[in-house]
Image (cartoon, rainbow, N blue to C red; front, side, top):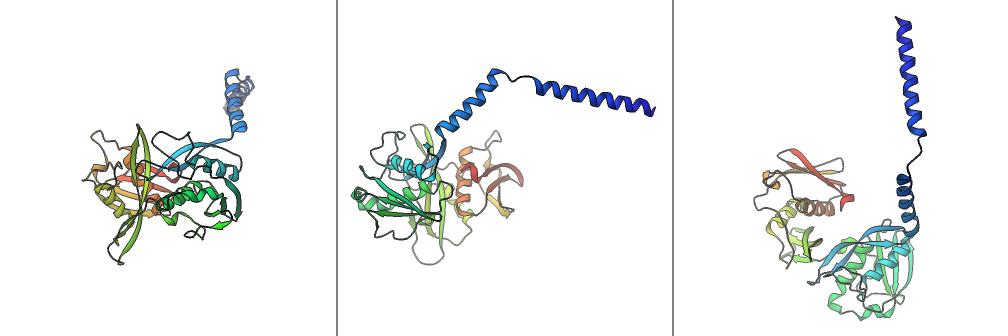
Length: 306
């Protein structure tokens, strides 16, 4: 009996090895070879990647959008992004505009660790002073989307701008909105809204300064429920939506809502998830937001999805 079992085992093993060898010795089809070669050629020749930049809508709010940037080094990508942000650029999506003054040249890029220093030509200073904050913020936020950049310093002909002499990061806020009436209980919260332009959906971060000592996620949900007070921005949250509780565990922010997070088909709107998640990820040092309905996990959004 043992001999029979041994023979069957040897036969099974031999047959399995024969099948494996047969499969791996078949030649690849031309179709598969062409697909692989084409993908490699595109990556090697163009080195294109999708990166986020911030452009102005007609209300002069900075709107996040994506472009393909060609460049193998950070310096090359910085140069391409700056070209996109110049007012005369005609490659932008309809309804969105650049803001760096025409004929501006990027004279030099240097760096000190993760701080990148940009030196512009004198044409940069021809902007309207009332738009200075939006211009500086748009440049900083656009470039900080690139990996390995943590701060941006802006010079013009080797000199610092009067109001921006220190390295800048996202703590300067974006589309800043001041809703404060005293110095007590100050809070700073980033909230993402939707802006639909020519049938395209864009996300717009708004940094709100307000007198509210509550936890930031509570403020975020209420602000989204109440809706934006800027024209053409949208929030899809139902007024009956309630955040039951929340917790932070292992780099994940868990948000537990009532049934109004779901529609009548028991689905959840992607824009609702993203506006809440993007807002949360901008305010909390976590890498994922997990959505729950009555303590049952339904969806998650990670930082790489932003």
